[in-house]
Length: 119
Image (cartoon, rainbow, N blue to C red; front, top):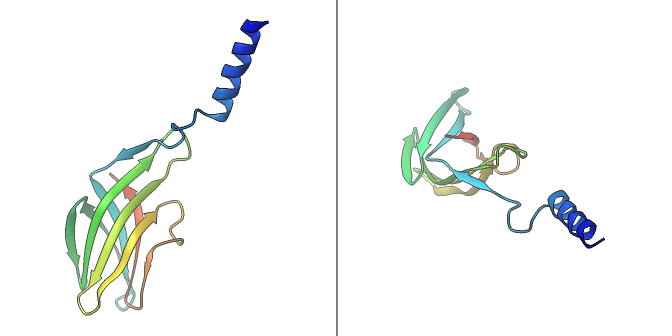
């Protein structure tokens, strides 16, 4: 009977997940971003290394972190991005989420920027 209780307890742990291991992330060294220049009507894909700043037209784009969730679960990518526009200073700072691109992208009158993936 004791042996059955141990097996049942193990089954419950495996089914519900072990606390503390629910979120596993892999760090990547590059963020791949898509930039839409609304005035020109063009979209470009750029790669920004983590902890670097890349200039794209009037924007300065810095990526502080780019992470991937466990690929064996619902795979997703997250990047912490800071964006400055030459005339306005910082216009965005926060996490972008690949699976929900409309949730937290940069959207301003001149540009849209969203996360494509991490590499």
